[in-house]
Each structure stands twice: as C-alpha cells, then as structure tokens.
Image 1 (tube, rainbow, N blue to C red):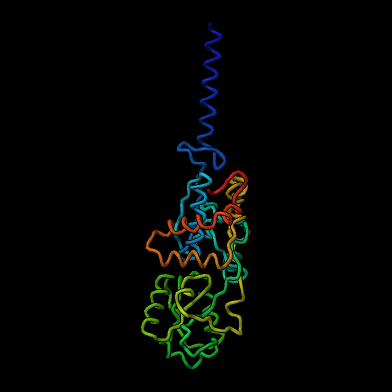
Image 2: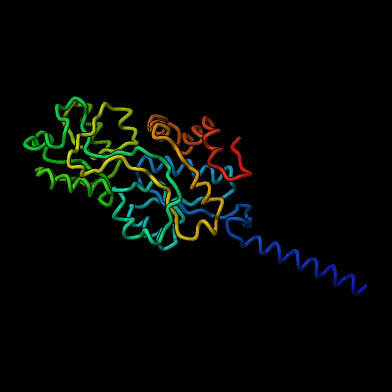
Length: 298
C-alpha cells in the first residue's frame, strides 16, 4: 500500500513539474494563458510599416497562436531596441540606401530575415499639375513652394537624402520635420486649393493612389534608385522562436499588394487591423505560402 501511494505521489509531482515547465517555456511551448509566447514588434508611423505590422500581427495571433506586443517609436530607437534584444523584429528596413546609416551602426547586432517587398522608390514629389519634373528645375523656383519641403520624421532615411539633395542641387529650401500624417495633411490641403507643394515622397504609399503625383527626376541620385524592404530581427530570434522567424522570412508581398492594403486602410472607415484582416481573407493562398508547415489560414 505504501509503495502504491509513493508511486501515485511521484506521478503527481512529475506531472506538476512538466506543467510548470510548459508554463515557463518560450515561443515553442504554451504559456499559462494558452499562448505560445509574446512576439515584440517595433513599428514607425508610416503607412507601409503599419500595414505590414498589422498583417503579421493578425497571422501570428489568429493562426499561429502567439501574443504580439507592438510598440510605436521613431526609427532610431527601434534599431537600438532590436540590437539590444528588447524588440524581436521590425518590418520594413529599406536598403541599400535609406536605412544604411542604421544598418552600419547596428547591422552586426541584428539579423536580416528576408525581403518583404521590392521596387520601393523615394524622392521629392509634387502634384502633377506643377510644371516641374526634375529636382534641378526647383533651382530658382523655390519661392513657388514657400522655400520649403514638407518632410516626415527627422530620423527617417528619406530626410537625410533630402538634406543631401538640398546641398547637392544648391536649393534655397528648408526641410520641415513632421510625420507621415502631417505631411499628407499638408499635401491634401495644397491639392484641394491647387497650390504648389514639394514633399518627401515614397512608394508604396496611398497618396500615389489617391492623388495624381510625380516623383521628381533625381539625376544626382541623392535618393538612390529602387530599393528593397527587409524584415529584420534581434539576434537569437531564429533559435528562440524558429517558426516566427520562418514566417517573417517567408512573408513577401508585391509592391501592388502593399499599395492595395494601405489604400484600403486609408479609404475604409474600419479599424486598420480589421481592414488588414479583410485583405488576408481575400488573399489566403498568398498568406498560406508564408506559413511554416502545419499552419493554414482558413
């Protein structure tokens, strides 16, 4: 009888130990609330990054069973956080030019997982009704646009390129710091009044779908040529959360698909996340091609 009690007691203790171990496991085991673990994503207030982050969050949570914590920040702190291991991933690093300064500083302390989209372009943009087609043609016409370029976040690579363009082309223009929302608000106001304006512009972005805009020719290539966007991660993510890393490595959209999502977000009254969920439901075959074996979006 004593032996039977001891056997039962040992079995109970062993089961409790296993359950406790499962409760403390990372991404590949279940936490106490049933989630596999928490994926920490950093994002900036740019529409393409917001779209990609929402799509990834929905898939990680709804299909793969993870929790996701998304933190909005400026670009430089996000790279610092990924390099230190505090943030797991960022979706949308532009290379070879736009984010080169950050990659030169932190590249050895993070991992490039894969290309998330291609054919990214950036430069100075104007409404199509303006009779200016090249950055060179702005020289001597700066007063036409109140001697300013309406920009975005000061830490953005496109802002560094814009500063270089002002110097290289000898422009009497001041680069105005702001954000994507403040820049597009200024653009919308100018277009409604058919007034001239110069902004920092890039594709993919909904403004090129909504408005008739043109990127000014840049013969000095201050803004570079076509770029690719990459998903980056902290060192160790591939070992700690291999299926998360695999998913982010496989996640790939065409430039038109990214444009489609961000335009849907801009023109819908629904929450951005719900808009992205709708896009996923309309593109199941594409999304399933990103998933590790054993997962499917229904």
